[in-house]
Each structure stands twice: as structure tokens, then as C-alpha cells.
Length: 459
Image (cartoon, rainbow, N blue to C red):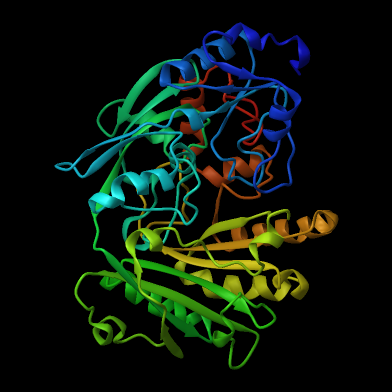
């Protein structure tokens, strides 16, 4: 491609450049540990103007750039082969809080953990938090961002009032629903294909000091989904997360919710904030779980830091490949689709796969594709696979992704996705023509294209 002839040191003096072997190697993989792409150099901006200089340089030289926060993708979305990787983590200023608007200004490189540390002591929290607080604000806004309160509030990208961005052609602009609205729509969940997020004004809300969680255990998926639909309509819990657990799977410390019959159980954690003692009977009235037991109460900051349960201890899965496969499924087709998928999934792989279920109401973010209007079920497969077994397991995982799409689902694009131009057109549907127009308008030289999305010939 551009290789060793690309003069990245033309940026020296404007922004920190790291092109030693260690820096390039560290920037060559993401958290999926499947794709490897080695950049020519890593640029470490400290301000929006620094980002603008990098993107302008890329337009002059024809170099591609890729945006990376903490690299929490699984298919190389934050990587570049031979181009310049922008490490956004140094653009990380937080504040101030606007209490009247209930918003917070935060730069793209700050992590959600840092945001929680800034607003939490004052009794605020972001409206939606991802389950991994060590992701960056810019990274999750560029992909969508889903968490335990998404059944109430949608995605993080849908809870942004304003963005500051550098477009692919090097303009530093602010955008919102009323200013540069097309750029605002293209950027939220736009995978960094049209602009680089440098700052956001995100929505926050007042929270209570404590959180109580009830674990509800189900033996069939239909009953779980009926209860989730009831919870969606009545909005009685602040937080919700659910998953599927195979009989052979043993989440550490959770042996008491194994299925009574069959191969599967379906645990769901529902949580409520409180200061005074909550009405437990009223909260659980009308639900149809097999068993309920209460987890220990937590203060709000400790609860925000709860990660999704995994079928393996952290020390074991830290070095494994993780081809995450996630999709939004039509609510009416979800149970049948998940059941058929499990029937086709090898039992040995299921034992090391975390399976998540997450309901979501209507979402106003144009770049985040959903099956239709109304509530959908977020379904996620998180397999933890040794590198030696990856090539045999990947076709199985990819077949599962195709089954989700065939059932009317739309893929969530942070995970393991490999597609050609026709498949991308099908994914975006009627939005595809608009996407090509936005690409021509905001990134005419394609410097923000790292090969993840295949655009094909432009009309």
C-alpha cells in the first residue's frame, strides 16, 4: 500500500507520532484477537485541532486513517493496514455538567469509567452505560452503545444532544438535530466512516444511591420474553440483563440456577435504584419466573461497574479469540430463531459461549439498523475460542450470524462481521443510497475507509 514511503514524520511537531515496532504491534489487533492489521504509525492527538491536522494530512497524502480508543472491536473495525491509526485516548477532557439541560460535555477519548468517576459523586450517571466501562465515549457512540438501561433509554448514540467532529475532508464542525443534522445522523453509530468524534454532549440523569438486583430464573425462553415484554411496557425496573445458560456451562458462583429440566435455563437480572426500602412484592408481581433470589445490594458506582458474566474465569479468556456475533431480532421471531440456532450450534462450543438477551425499544439513530419499528430483542453470542481452534470454529459462528439475518435480524456491527458489497447494501436497505451520498459529502477521498465496509462502485 503506502508502506515505508509514507512520510508520517511530516506530522511531527503537530502531534505525537509513534512508529517504533512495539507501538505498531500493539496497535495491530483488537479485542477479538482474530484480525491483524499493522499501521504505518500511531498518531496520538491531544485536542480536536490535532485530530484535524492528522485528517488534513491524510487527505494530502492519500493515507487511510483508523480510529481507536481501547480497541474493543472484534473484526478489525479500529485497525488499518499500512495507514495511520489515531489513538484518541489523549483527547479526554470531561466537563462541565449542565444541570439545567441534564447533560455533560466529554471528549471522545475519555472512558466511561472516567465519566462515572466524574459525575457519580455528585449523584449523576449517564443515561446509558455499557457493561465494559473501559471503552471510550467516542468508540461506543460510533458503534451504538448498549447497556443494562437500554430497555428504558435505548442506545448511548441515541442519548447524545450534540457532537463536535472532524469530517473525513478535514472540517471541524459541531452537529446536532438542528445544526448539520445530516452529519449528526451519519456520525452516531456510523463506525467512524464519515467523521471522527472529538467531543459529545451526552445526557445524564439523577440517580439514587443504592441498587437492588433480583435474579429471576426461567426454564423456557417464551416465558422469559413474555416477562421482558411486560417489564418494557410497565417500566418498573431501572436495569435489566438476561442470558441463556447451557446445562454444561458453569458461571462461577452461580451453580444454584442450573436448569431443572432440559438443557437450558434463562437467568434474568432486574434491578431497581432505591434510597428507602423498595416494594419487592410490587416489583415482582405478575412475573412468571421459576425461581427468584436476591443478590446483594450495591451502591450505584459499584453496580455500574458490573461486567457481563462469562463462562470462563477472566484469567483464561484474556488470551482467547472472541468472534462476538450480535443481532437485533424481531420480537415475534426471536424465540424460534434462538431455538433453531442452538440446535445447530456444537455443544462443545456452547460450553464456552456467553449468550446474551437484551430487549430494546424504538431507537432514533438512523445508522443503527433494526428489523422494524417497535421493540426488538438484542441477541449476542460471545464465544471464547483458543487460537488453535479458531479456523474450524469461525465457519460455525459465521453460519449463526447468517441464520440471525435470515430470521429477519439486523447485525450489530461491533462484532465479528465479514461482508461483501451486496450484503452491506442489504444490511442498510433504503439507507444505502443516503450512506453513499454522505460518504461523498463528508469523506470524498475515503481516508476514513479501512476496508471494513465494502462500498463497491459508487453510482
